[in-house]
Length: 83
Image (cartoon, rainbow, N blue to C red):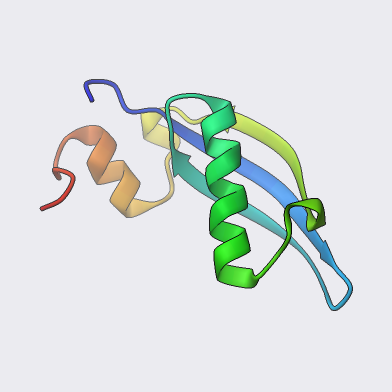
């Protein structure tokens, strides 16, 4: 894993009792993989079906604009995965 890509996924959750927007930073190889990971994480964490999630934008984030401290360390090489 020489070059790690970080994607910022923004979207909305529309459930009958919950309407909220979200923004997540995800490590993935391609935007499609980031989209699937967001579906899996939100579905698991908030019990949201895929048809309740509307993804608005997926963009690759340059290393200097990453806001998640753990991902920032991972991309910069300060921290190894699994340690």
